[in-house]
Length: 317
Ligand code: CP
Image 1 (tube, rainbow, N blue to C red):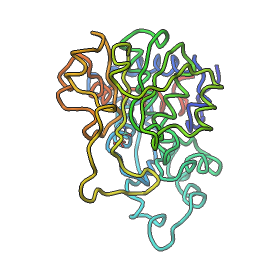
Image 2: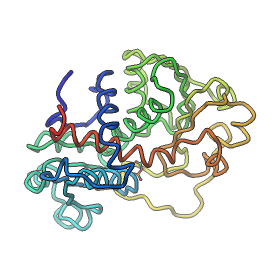
Image 3: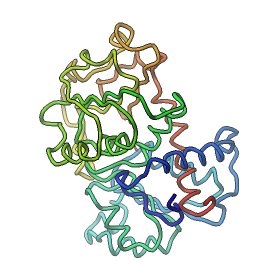
Image 4: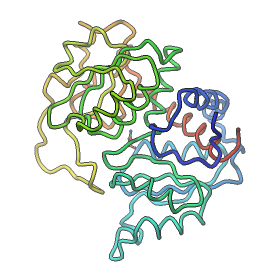
């Protein structure tokens, strides 16, 4: 297996099947810190730099929490407007990362431009973690999703997934790459204007993903082991900030998951995942059903990032 030490985590395209299990194994080993709410000292001599050019609740705070749990240090920004990248100077990625690499040992970056973390990695002498780049990818979210399913089902093979919502989303790209490493059947449900780009559809087919398009959740909810959701009412991820103005519309039933739908049709052990935040595509009455695992992911997201940081920073080989 390739070493994780010093590695950039930019895409799940490059992630090999056995590497998922290695990350999950390390997550098990570091879990006592998170479970017992007790910060350790595994990364006490290391510093994480967070460079977030787009809003985030989960990804930034889970990554920072992971570093704190391991006794490491954290610096960075959560609003580029308060840096030279977001003011008059519009300082570029190359110049910015030449600074950031001196302030810490790993950079976690979210950016509104697809490919920005990869561009940063070209110029940084420390590893870069892609925490979401435009419509591109969101590897750490999907590693958390995969770990959540592995913990629940004990396998990532032999499962039927329904991907529902906006297929342009970075999570949908990363999950498609991830699922292509496993024996899965995938149904894809999205409006035409939010469907996979033709070249991406061709790419995942070439990668061996067994997938098929459907029109309505009703058609496949009874077959699903995992329902993986994103909104169809959502912001433009190529903008640094997209604030809601006025009425944004409602989600058509084709792309909506409700308690009534699940109790009428879903398998008893079907799992619903959503990277959050949600709009009305996932109704709050699902939160108290046995199908809900999106709140479980708040915890798993910290564990997974503890594992990734430990591996990248060489605390485990
Ligand atoms: N899942 C996710 O990326 O959430 P945030 O935008 O809050 O980080």
